[in-house]
Image (cartoon, rainbow, N blue to C red; front, side, top):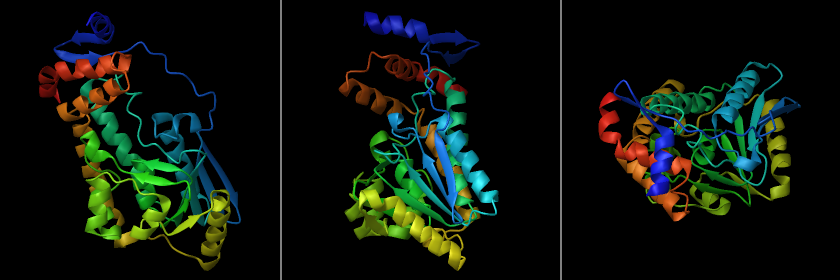
Amino acid sequence: MANMSTLVKQVAILRNSSVTLKTFVRHKNTGNNELVLSSTKNNVTTITMNNPKKYNAWDMALTDQLVDKFNKAANDQETKVLIYTATDPYFCSGGSLAEFLGRKSPKGLQKMIRENNERCFNIFIEFPKPIIAAVNGPGIGSGTTAPALCDIILASQKATFLTPFKNLGVGPEGCASVHFERILGSESAKRLLIDCWKPTAAEAKEIGLVAEVVPHDQLLMRAQELGEEWARSGRERIIRGGGDVEEYKKINAKESNDLAEAFVSAEFLKTQLQFLRKKGKHLSIPGAVLWLMLVTRPAWARLL
């Protein structure tokens, strides 16, 4: 445990009876300020997550830009329809917790997760114009739940869908606790949320999650074609399953709060440590932070 003890000393500071965790990891700049791209053609705006080196994960830098692009498209009179897609090979690998570890106290971490998760899904729930999700590759976590909040999902043959919340020891997000059963039925919702089933694009079409499966090189062409059709016909925004904006905002708020609580739970911390151990990374700085949070949890949990 010598290495672990050294790492723990580097990241733990006890102050005013609360646990403040710090790491000395340098967070590298991606070298690309345009983590989210936006372009408009024939009244159809395409918003593209553009951080392929990080599998288009929803980290703070990307989500800040994503929220900004969605807000601009919502207020742009030229935009009648939105396409939501990503740069290959992944669509989105879900939320990114690693950047938060050690930079916030457990209470601060909980607050940041709750607020960021809620605002990210609210941009889909509140968006006033039709959204076409063009899923170009694997979608994990929010890479599945956010497209499900769009009017339609067009999927590349390379797309897969995974909501591994149960395996992570956390609850659903993106209103999936209610929305999945409404749009897919109870059996398919259970397979996705409880069994953590990972359907292919074709399988996702069979259960009704995906509307069309398209050859990979034709995905954006088909999305643009459909978007222009919708723009000409004056199609209005529809939340699948008959969801109401205010109802879904309340569900999102509750799920975000539950998620924030789960992320600092003993079950989640143990699950993440086991995951790092399997990858041989349990002695890394994130591993040390998770270990320290777990062993000191009885002390700081009372302060949440």
